Length: 269
Ligand SMILES: CC(C)(COP(=O)(O)OP(=O)(O)OC[C@H]1O[C@@H](n2cnc3c(N)ncnc32)[C@H](O)[C@@H]1OP(=O)(O)O)[C@@H](O)C(=O)NCCC(=O)NCCS
Image (tube, rainbow, N blue to C red; front, side, top):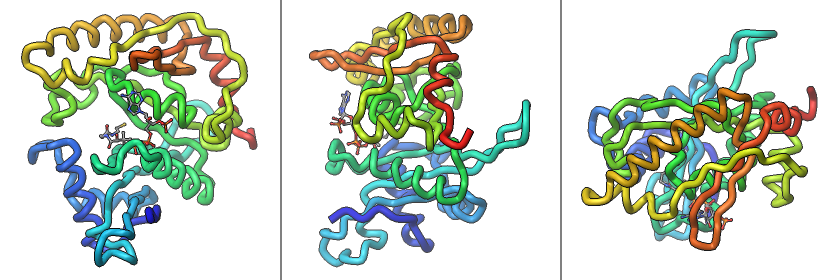
């Protein structure tokens, strides 16, 4: 009943904007307008939607059926070697009642399929390392790695998911046709890797961020983990895995960057 495809036309883009506001609760200073979505698609990015065709009157999809979307913009890596085009995926949202049924992962897989079809082999996005679910999706289910930590990346955010905390972010790197990513998407374990350090996130952090009384605990975890990530990355480690324990606490697994890069080599390289 769920169709995943590129959005088209003004009304489907407007539906993405509505779902954006519903998901993050952004005010006017943060919300991306429809023209940012339209342009993304025009300049080589992606606006991919998940449509529930079972909703009355939506058998063909359309704006009333939109229950999720992924938005990306094209970027260019410069530096050593030839400039390399890649996609920066800025937003992934699934409507609340449709979550935890694999739609987020399906939207990412469609981003990957569409990018590879155009010869784009690398995608990045940022995510809040205090969100256990997002870390699990990005690092475990999709096979991304992270080796960069950005302090207060977007400045103050009106996102209700942020709870007023600094917008610290990890940068997820997704090498689209690497054996590592293929294994993760097939549900196979990655090749054995050495874990040198672990960084933990308590399961309750989401509630702490949302509660005036407990926000201080979330701030303390953010500060402590910020230092740990920065120190680990400065000595050549990268996040190469993520697990959850029985209580739902998250564990970032860090190992040598060279090892992550080896598992990340694109098939054609
Ligand atoms: C993040 C988001 C897009 C994921 O969409 P989704 O459709 O629920 O994702 P999926 O169902 O594909 O995958 C979620 C996985 O996390 C797991 N999960 C759910 N709650 C979890 C938790 N508290 N801790 C760890 N893992 C959790 C699910 O079980 C599922 O794994 P499984 O398929 O192995 O069972 C959705 O939750 C959302 O819109 N969140 C708000 C906006 C946001 O944070 N966007 C992402 C910015 S990077």
